[in-house]
Image (cartoon, rainbow, N blue to C red; front, side, top):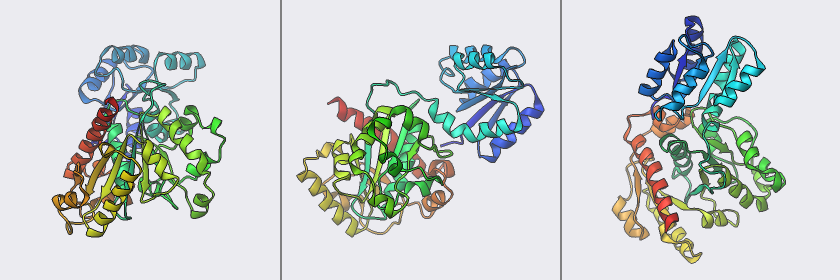
Length: 385
């Protein structure tokens, strides 16, 4: 994945420089234009992820510029934020009504707030294709710890958001007793699945989830973090979990649920209701042996083979079984294989960065992209049968 590209359109050079510096510190790639005409040309040729423009764009105003963007299929869906040097409630209402996702004053504090809000803006500007459509659910499960299921889950979720146009993605961490994904993406808050499970079911709505689920920087998805402590996991209101999963599926196009090696009365219903079961396997004999036992249990529980998507993760090393040997033992076709990454996955996780942003030219980044597209295609194919 390339850096997130942001186009700024502003005739004021000093203002451009100030905003560019703040965006660059957050590792955004900045494209600059000074006029409406330049901005339109840059938007069509560079495909920015977000556009920030002044109310006065030199050869027109921001409303004219937005109409230009909306009239071109290539640029029509790019979210736009407007900056202004004055406060005018009527103007703000007009700009938001026209289609701008936010309206910010051109002050230092407000522009810092804008930069902080970009991750949230990028995901909330995406629309669920149909408010009544039920999103696809992918569960990530492994038979043994250390297979990298959590890293795969959140990185594939980010790639789904990146590769499948206008898709909304939520990742739910159900690893017990302590969630794993918050540490990977760098989320430091105290919001978790335990908080949501404590609420009456009627309060867990689409509006609540979209407003309250954190959006980690650079990940392009909403996260429902796992339990922060074993104590929180022990007190988890498990009867509310099915409703939370359904509320997520009503709110987002894709819901990825990381179960890790959790197999219990909480996780089994989630697995059975999923559209795709991503069975993460590593190359060591012990893990493959345990995975075979897990697959046999799934069959006893009536889980169809067509829903299982075995994923061989070689990220931890070259030693162990080959893909063919693992397939023979499991009696399953392995659909995707992650190559050996040496320490790349660990380094990206330690820096709270998506692998495909940290190493965009790495083979593994291409595999993650392919996995996001193939899993989506395969799940839709199953649904259509």
